Length: 58
Image (tube, rainbow, N blue to C red; front, top):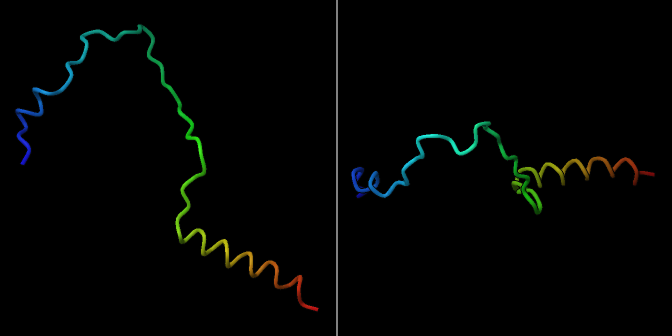
């Protein structure tokens, strides 16, 4: 079990003043393909089947 007092001793102390006088944010863009859930794949397959059926009827 974790001891709260031991964890607090391991924490990095925060600086009293911020390093930059003007705060800023960094936006990070992930690289690589997005994670697709199995439910999204099933919905995509169903809609593709429905959309191509009307084209093959003849």
